[in-house]
Image (cartoon, rainbow, N blue to C red; front, side):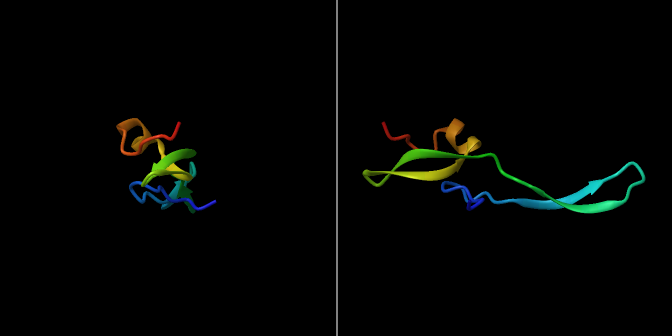
Length: 63
């Protein structure tokens, strides 16, 4: 699965997990992507869109 939002291009962010002893280990912050049918031009396509773009109405869902 491509971890990339079709609308805004949001992708995974990288950081560190900190244990109780403050030892750092690498981790990934995944975006909340949903596979939805959206209108691209005039044709419906299934694309991954982040929930922020869905809530803001940046894409139009296909019926």
